Length: 236
Image 1: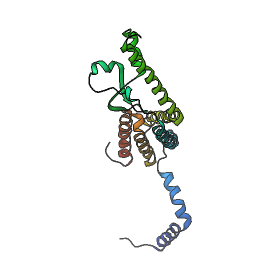
Image 2: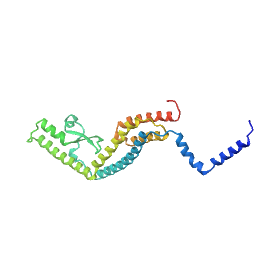
Image 3: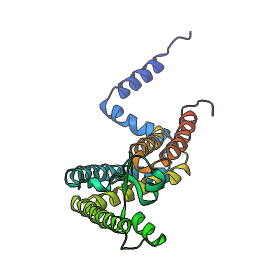
């Protein structure tokens, strides 16, 4: 090992004193920032939009859930006469439909006579008004019309359709970000985090996206995995 000269010892002492000063410590992040690559602006902009959309989606989803709870409290009960009895499905299926919740999910295994199916059958089969069956079917059609109108009125009173439209619009905009994010390769972990937030946000909205949630999140997930391997120096 070579001996340290007085000049070298003086330089090292001065350097140590500088590094220990608050000014040097404060300058360290700025120096590091100049060395690290900057994230692509075309990724940062969608990232900001993503966070705004996620906040909007959560607000819309909460509003929709409240509207659904209100609807469930005030929705009409289907008249017993409209509930299709079990058996003889070849006779009753053309006159009825599967009962559905307000969000479209099916209520198994019950079927219910609906106005449209009844009217189509009456017209297609030219069922006379004067027969007992004709009177029965028309009575069911009137009853179904009144019940369906009451359900619609309850949904409007609860604000369900308006809340559903807002939630659907925000979800579509979230999904639309996927294509834009896939066009940019993250340069930093901050950029990779944006992809991770997008994956989590789309999965949060999976009930609205349906099968598309798996497509969006898996595609973004693969993009994120490749970015992390590249940024951290792993094999790609």
